[in-house]
Amino acid sequence: MTVVLLFEQLLNGLQLGIMLFLMAAGLTLVFGIMNLINLAHGSLYMVGAYLAAAFMQWTGSYIWGVLLALPATMAVGIVTEVVVLRSLYARDHLDQVLATFGLILFFNEAVRLIWGPQPQFIDLPEFLSGQIEIIPGSPYPSFRLGIILVGLATAAFLYVLVTHTRIGMRIRAGASDRVMAGALGIDIRLLFTLVFGLGAVLAGLAGMMAAPIVSVQSGMGEEILILTFVVIVIGGIGSIRGAFLAAILIGVIDTMGRAFLPQLLETFLERGAAHTAGSTIAAMLTYLLMAVVLFFRPQGLFPPRSR
Amino acid sequence: MKPDPKPVKAPSSATVQSARTTAIQIVFGFLAVMPLLALALDEPFYLTLFGRVMVYAIAALSLDLILGYGGMVSFGHAAFLGVGAYTVGILSFHGIESAFLQWPAALLFSALAAVLIGYVSLRTSGVYFIMITLAFAQMFFYFFTSLEVYGGDDGLTIWKLSSFGGLISLDDNLTLYYVIFTALGGCLYLSHRLVNSHFGRVLQGIKSNETRMRAIGYPTMRYKLLAFTISGTMCGLAGVLLANQSEFVAPSYLAWHRSGELIVMVLLGGMGTLFGPVMGAIAFMLLAHFLADLTIYWPVIFGPFLIAVVLFGRGGLHGLIGRMGGKGG
Image 1 (spheres, helix red, strand yellow):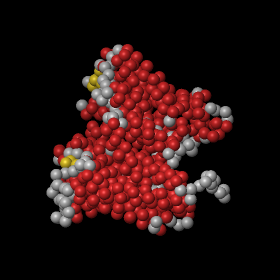
Image 2 (cartoon, chains in turn brown, red):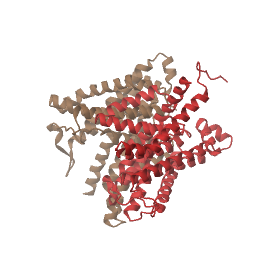
Image 3 (tube, chains in turn orange, brown):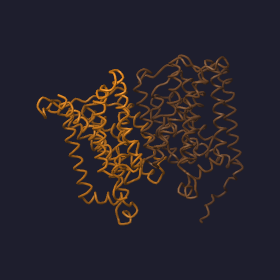
Image 4 (cartoon, helix red, strand yellow):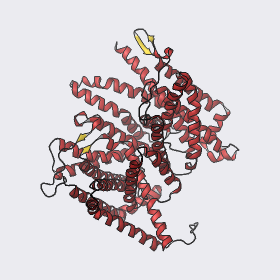
């Protein structure tokens, strides 16, 4: 019984980790290549979820909703990059924090203005709303399983894109030396816009996949954004491999902590106290982990090799 | 050495300085007689509004000490606001209302929190520092959220405000206003002495080149940690005042939006100046207040305004007043 529960929570952790990876991949690419802190990355997650909900209502199908929302989110990302962020690359981090903070305010309120204050809901198609028995006696929601598969496929796609294609080569060149890459004839501005669009799609995809599980509402991207910061800081900023490993690590630790810490503490403490202390520590666990990692490895666990 | 390019017809620093001094006098004079104005207009709400503005001015000033003078971009300063406020709230909850116990305890806890956060965070720099301070603030946020005895998510109402044993009563809005006013004046004076002291000079040296400061023998980490602690403690004082003013504490005091707003105030007013954060806080709070009156969707306007300030504004309001003074004189 406990083994089944453990396995289930492990899958839940993996699923959260995959979500975090989709967010972190875009954020870490944008930071690694353009040296830009983008607080508004969570807004793209939110915009993705809202767009998927809107397109779903229009077409009547979640799958079509996602397929239409992906390019739409990319368009939102590219417009944001061209209008605002492009002017910020040369600025210091403080200016970037401030301007992208302004973007968050704008996006949070804009979706409320367009779709109203009430949360949006998404119905899953039948083949995704059932459950699958992966191990006997333990049914697991097939949609969550789908998230894990899509996420792993995306990770594989990113790996191939970055390490085995010409565009990936340019991205890596831009990451290790912007000026030199520009001097060698790579259109850096276009590359930046493309990378930002890619990051926007990944964040949007995460939002769309989260949409049926959580409620789609203004500000929904912020909690996951901060968790994503923890991921890329632990993973080492600029490293996709680090982002992947750290995302899975954080996802599993966070989920496991919330699920088992209160019970674990019951062996030492009396019940009420164990419950309170357990949930308190569980909520702070990932941040504690980050503090410990940074204390011993200020550059993160897997800093990019090129630098 | 390359000489600095001089702008054509540079305003003399004396006129700029005097324009700024005039601005400071006007603002302080206004804050001092504000209660009379509120009385005359029969708008007691303005007393609360400007009291709140001054509380945030103290918090922004404390942030500017490390941000503007020390180059440390703390994105988690609201944590100290929360620690200060919650100390008052929790002590009051347990029946300890004496300000002579509450306030020192609140400052002590804020200082301890700052030492703890600073000790870990200051090992990193740049973007890592921004994110680790943010993460610490989140940690405190979730900590207070999970304290169900003290209201958890919903926060804690403070039934009995800090009591000064019959000397003065904070229940009286006017008294509270002038207590905050005095606190702001005190913090400004303290900061003025601090940034012009040997310690303050070293701190500014560290901001412009830490490696050099270390090379000439300053233990830069200790200086930064002390500055961080002073700043956190001052922000804790703002938290104490905030708790008394709102008669309420909640985890939202530590929300990361709040930390972002403090940075906005500092940059809006002009960082690396003492009076800038005060003006920034006034401008931010009033703008938010009046935009909110205009439309409930005010962040739609405020967000782009903020971006415009970053892209086109230089030196915030402080710089603007300096330039205006330069043009006029």
